[in-house]
Every structure is written in C-alpha cells, then in structure tokens.
Length: 385
Image (cartoon, rainbow, N blue to C red; front, side, top):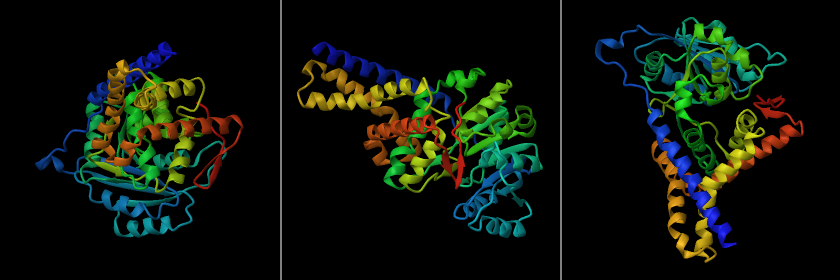
C-alpha cells in the first residue's frame, strides 16, 4: 500500500509538472496584437466587413454596435443577420441602420436541413459582405476602439488565413466563475502551441468562435462555414476546415481589445459547454485520456494534500505533495490574474475541473444514447468530427 501511495504522489507530481511547463511555454506564444498605429496612420485605409449572427440578442446587440461605431482607423461595413429572433433584435438593429449607413440589417432565411443555425447565419453574412477583410463576431462581444484595426493588422503581419482572438471573459455568478475561466486554462495547458503555429496539423487547430478574422479569398477557398455546416462548435471546427485545405490558422490574446460575457447563469453555462463538448473532448478515445490527465494534474494534488494532513500519507512525501499543489495551482492563478479576475474560480478550481469533466461525460453519454442537443430553441443531432 505504501508503494502505491508513493507512486500516486509521484505520478501526480509528474502530471502537474508536465501541464504547468506546457502552460508556461504556451504563454510565450499566446501574445496580444501589436499596438495600433498612431498619428497619420489612422486614415481610413482599412476596409472591414464585420459579420454578426444574432438570434434573440436584444439585450446584447446594442452595446456591441455602440462599440463598433467607435472604431478607429477603419472603414466599416457592419452586417447583422437576424436569425428568426422573437425578442425585437431586428428592431434594434434597424434603428441603428437608419442612423448609421455603415450598419445593415439582413433577414436570415430559415435554416435548411443539414445546417446548424449559427453556421448558416455566418455563411449568409459572408455572401453579403462588401469588403475583403472579414471579422466574425458573436453578439455578446464588445470591442475597444482600436480592436478591429489591431486584429486585422495582426492577421496580416502573421500571414494567417484565419486568426482568432480570445476575449476577456466577464463572469458574474458562481457557476460562471467556476466554468468559464477554464477556456483559457485548458487552451494553454493542453494545446501544443508550437504545433499549432508552425504546422498545418488539423489536430493542433484551435480558435474562439466569438472573434474570427479572415479574408474573403481564404473563406471561399476553405468553404467557410459551409464546410462545417452541421457543427455546433465553430471555435474548433472552422480552423480545422481551413487547415484541411492547407491554409494557415493562428490565435492571439484579445483580452485587451475585446470582452465578452458568454452566459449569465449556471444553467446557460452548462448548456453552452455541453453543446460544444462532442466536437471537443467528449469523444473516444480522447475523453478517458483527458479525464485521467486532468484529474492527476489538477485534482489529485489536493486529494494527496488532504490525505497527508489526515496522516494517511507518510511525512517524507510532504515536499512532492506541496510541490504538486503549487504546480497545479500556478496555471489557474496566472489565468485568474491575466484573464478573468475570478477569485472563486481560483479558490475552487479543482471543483471546476470535476464539473468540466462531468459535462464532457454527460455530453458523450447523451450522444451515445442518440439524444439531440438543444440550443437557441433549436434541436440538433450531436456531431462527432
């Protein structure tokens, strides 16, 4: 028994060391966009079509449009597609369009068989865009005045066909604080950034569906959202579609130029993460591997610490137990300070990991039973990539 406990402590320390090391390496790659040009460089020489799918976004679309209309150094074409909203989203957008010629309201067509709502909305938007630079935004995002120029220039400097920005995530309720910050934690602990940046491997593709920057030419060549028409998780699947035809994708830290509050309660957060799960980790054989790795790296150190405090683990193992706890918490503390400022999320992050894994297994089990995914008052069959 002593040998087994010692082995568990050492394996826990190794897992925590591996993930914290990868996290620190990835931080070197996960950089913000360069500063916006100053003085005369702010002339309107950059033409950008901002494409926004909106379904029942009456509470969010106004703040987004307000932030876009303050954009500096770009010539705007803001297209909002109303995807059969029932809450007056179209009325709000129309009021902006009447006062601002750069804002347009598009009426979405009914979703045809074989498409998900967001992918069809984005595909329709791309057909109506006036400029060759595309920026896809979710309606719950708000941008800084220099965000569009910085994001597009960053894509151009990186020579990326598809660039994705990860906004700062605002969290309110305890459920949000526990789960939403895991977006950055999992990205930086599990994605091998060198492979993402220096290869075209589909498995190394990643992105955030809230904020995509691309070009009309690359979008058409890849098939854009029509290539992932059944997907409910464009954050992963759109970069994979680009890489499938040999195009380059990249991502960056957009926390200084974009912010977002994805959900407003625990139920919404659970549903949103469940929707994305089967195109992420909730598939075999990935799910059991990820489960073991995350439990060892993020939960087991604290179980070992409690066991040591209770006298169940020999005192000679105190140093590796404490070191594994430090390495386990380091990525979450850094993410908390840099991205989400969630005190409860940091204090309770082992609970967050367990909840996240429960969501993944629940999503897999629902798919295994053939149950559809409910999202935005629509029902979809779960898709396995």
